[in-house]
Amino acid sequence: MTRVLTVLLAALIVAFAVVGNAAHAQQADTLTDAKRANIKKLLEITGIRAIPEQIANSTVQSMVGGIRQLDPKFPERGFVAMRDAILSGLNAKVDTPGGLIEQVTMVYHNNFTAAEIAETLRFYESSAGKKVVNLQNKINSETFQTAMRWADSLGSELDQRIDEAMKKENLKLPDPPKQGAAAQTPRGAPPAAAAGKSSPKEAPKKQ
Image: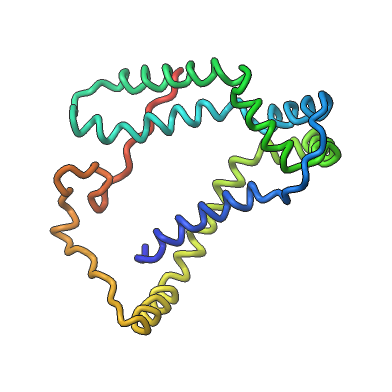
């Protein structure tokens, strides 16, 4: 993998997020009971209730490396317990006043008219829309993998462009660490900082 690929992949993540949320903002119409109900139905169809589990898993995953550094023998069940505690706390607030559904309802309300929400809902309730929902994770994964291969194929060209840009600015990128140095983890850095190390393993899901 070239030195530019990591930066490019990070940019792709941002780009996907922007594309996924780039609804044209319009002046909000009245949030009627019917519009609110349609938004909630749309959120249910598109999987809003899976978000707390994703947050809980991501939160605990981000903690694994640091905890393992402090206590390599910290048991796996501890991570599961933390994940479950976070998940139960989030799930308890999904439907409450000011909770996740209410807050995201306002996001949709401020960006889509009642007619647009109804039209979007009709699509997701159609056979094509149901297929989109069922295959969304697979499509997202395959799209990102395809983008990675595409970016990697352009690595040499992008490296050359970067070198030319640096020369114009009279700058020089630092040389990559030597093989021996890359194999060592800097003191105080998480294990993933070492070259060749994998990122912390996700806490196992509750059976």
